[in-house]
Structure formats: structure tokens, C-alpha cells
Image 1 (cartoon, rainbow, N blue to C red):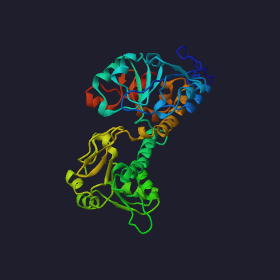
Image 2 (image 1 turned 60 degrees about the vertical axis):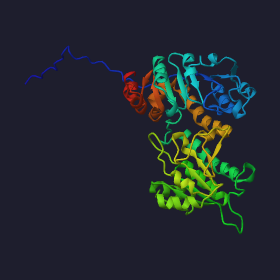
Image 3 (image 1 turned 180 degrees about the vertical axis):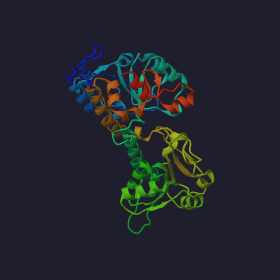
Image 4 (image 1 turned 120 degrees about the horizontal axis):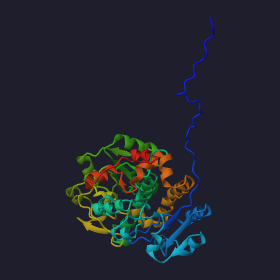
Length: 404
């Protein structure tokens, strides 16, 4: 039997195919601009001089508007020594391809925005307008919002820090308004020997609630926490590490407790839209005269029926003899701590973006960042915003994949 020769067809090609690998790009030099905030009584600044110094020593360029850090007591000199360039024209800062803001983008900013700019800022859903979004979309802007920025562990680091500040601050504020200096009742927040401890009621067992509880307990007050999630109440007890009075929000129990408390804190959060009102006007009218209500959830409508927005200049008003403190942006009153906290999250993010060769590559490699992006090259990628303003929604994952 003769051996058959192998048949070689011309349609085969025996060439090696190269595998296309996702090669890490060369690092890019970022050009970052920080404008001075004029809206929303904003005292914070998104990068501290220390953070700027790290960015500059990594080869990035930072331009900052004159006196941008003034409200947080960071001077121009601190920034120029850190290697930033100080400019006196707002328009010049806005020429930077990456813009870092401590307050949301407002109408006046829009004409100054550049095509294809990257904007990192908070987003106030209540103050957002459709035409503002549309103009940003026209300019093909990519925008990242502080609030929705996730880290590797799936938590929101900036929101967490701001909530920790607000929670801790709440008790300091309450102590201030209970004292005689502010025509308060003249009660010391906390407890001393032989005197029953001050009663503090906290509505909401989230991070604000937890930090307010810690501060109140540390002062020696008696704390009662209400929340409709038993899981959150359990978590709060575990984190605080001691047994405290907890209850689900049941109007009769709540009303009874409010009648005898000195301080009531509203720290309920809601995922979508307005915070539920759990304390009615009638409940407030039965509270002791001279007691203090602090509504931290006022930026989402507030959870006391009697709450009305106040400002850092005029923080309180009286109703039924009860002192109401309803300033929406509490962390801004502790601007230096808050700036430091924001800066701690943004500085590593900017460094990473530089190493990855720009934000587009960063978003491709770091999936958890995608939740923070509400505009990507002019396409609206936030479902809530598209629903609310009836604008076209684009899935960010598809958008990024299609551009690869």
C-alpha cells in the first residue's frame, strides 16, 4: 500500500496570528484647574496644598484661581509653594482639560467650559436643570460626580466622609444651642454626677446617625435611635460597641420620646427623591420649649414637618419654642476638615488617571468608577437624570466598549 502524501491546500495559510493585548499606555500629564467657588455658600476646596504638591511632583500641572482656598483657610502662598500656578482670571482656570470643583456646575460656568473637558464636582439633584445638562452635552463633556463615586469596596468614600463630619458636628452644634450663650435653655449637653443625662433622639441609623450617636455617648448623653431598618440598627449597635435604645419608627413611641428629649436629630436618608417626613408639626409642638431640632436631611426635604432651609449666616429659627437648625451643607461649616477628606479621595484618583494615560483609560480599567460618571463625552449616562429631564440615556458600559 503506497503512502499517501499530505494534501496541502492553498486556502490554508500557516501564519501566526498575533494576540492583541491590552497594553498599559504611557502615563499622561494632567492639566488640572481649580476655580474659586461662588455658589451654594461653598467653603470647601477639592484639593489641599498637600495633595497639589503630590500631583505636581508626579509631573502634573495645577492651575488655581486666586483665593480659591480662602474659605477653608488655605492661602494662595500655600498653593504656590506646593507648585500650583495662581491665576486671577476665572476663564483661565477653565481652560484646563480637567476641572476639579467643590460645588456643582452652575449656569455662569457653562460659557467657560471647554469642548471635551473632564469635570469632577458634586451634583445637586435639587438644583440641576435640564438646559444646564443639555449645554454640557453639547460641549461633549465628561462629568464625574462626587456623590456617586465608588471605591474598590463598593462604598461611596466622599459621601461617607461628609456624613461622618455631619454626624460628629451635629452634637457640637446641639451643645452650642443648648448653652445660655445662644439664648438656649442653659443645659450642658451630656451628663455630670447627680444630674440625669441629657436625652438625645436620633432618627436614622446610617453613617450620620452612627457618628452622632458616638459623639452623644462620648459626652455622656442618653441616646435613643430610631430607624425602620432593623439591619441598620443592628449594625449601628455593633459599630458603636454598646447596647443603646433602638426602635423602629412607630409614631406613638416616637412622639412620647420627643416630648421629653433635649435634642432631636433628623438623619434619615432616602435613595430616591425626598426624605420621608416622620415627625409631624403636632409632635414638634409637644416638645419641650428650648429643645433643639437639627435636621441634617434638609438637603433632601427634611424629616421634620416644621423644617425650613436656613443658612450658615442665619442657622436657626424658632417654632413652638423649639430651636430649629436646618443648614443643608453642614460639612461646609467645617471646611478645612471637609476639604481634606475630599482631597484624600480625589488626589489618588487623579494620580491613577495620570498613570493610566487619561480618564478614558482609567474608566476602562476601573469598573467601579463608572457609577460616578453622569456624562461621558456628552452622552448622558445617569439613569435618574435621564428619567427626570426626559433626556436620552446611554449605557456607559456599551459606550466605553464601543470606543475601544
